Amino acid sequence: MSTEMSLWSLFTNASLLVQLVMLLLLLVSLASWSVILQKGRQLRRSRDDAETFESRFWSGIDLVELYKQMNKRRKSLEGLAIIFESGFGEFARLRKQGGVEPMDVVEGAGRAMRVATSREIDKLEAGLAFLATVGSTSPYVGLFGTVWGIMNSFRALGGAQHATLSMVAPGIAEALIATAMGLFAAIPAVIAYNRYANEVGRLENRFDTFKEEFSTLLQRQAHS
Image (spheres, one colour):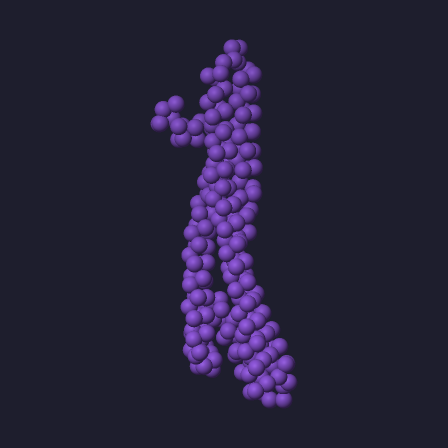
């Protein structure tokens, strides 16, 4: 088959349903790559921000001063920074009220940090469900297009007086393109999902570790 006949002619000669399946898989693949690239940048930024914040947090800086710095740019905070800002802000508010038991102050700060952590994890996990869906369903969508195309080829072959391979081969080739496109959409989505899900899990563990360490520091301050 010539280069001119390889892809475009297979698409144009396919049945309408197979063409729709190909177009759907192409759009899904483009959307999947958009999510993959965006999510990659987001997770890379989250890792860098976490390392930068931890360096500042454990540098010996006064927590009140660090909180003031974080509070000034609260709208742009992410990850550990917003968890710290939420926890320390609640801690300072409860202590300022007076009459609150030290353990209740620490517990209140812990609740604020858990809420902030949950929101951050939701942001990091956004888009992963889409990648999982693309990875699991695209091969079946492509297979559906292939089966439909092959059925049409054999239906046309049944009405011919002299059946030859050259009569059915183009139709089968057109149908198989749908399966290839399904795999093309699914494989990158599955690889990206597995990688990003692992990175989100590692960041979640990092957030949880920080919360435990920070809660210990707040407990000491609450009893001082």
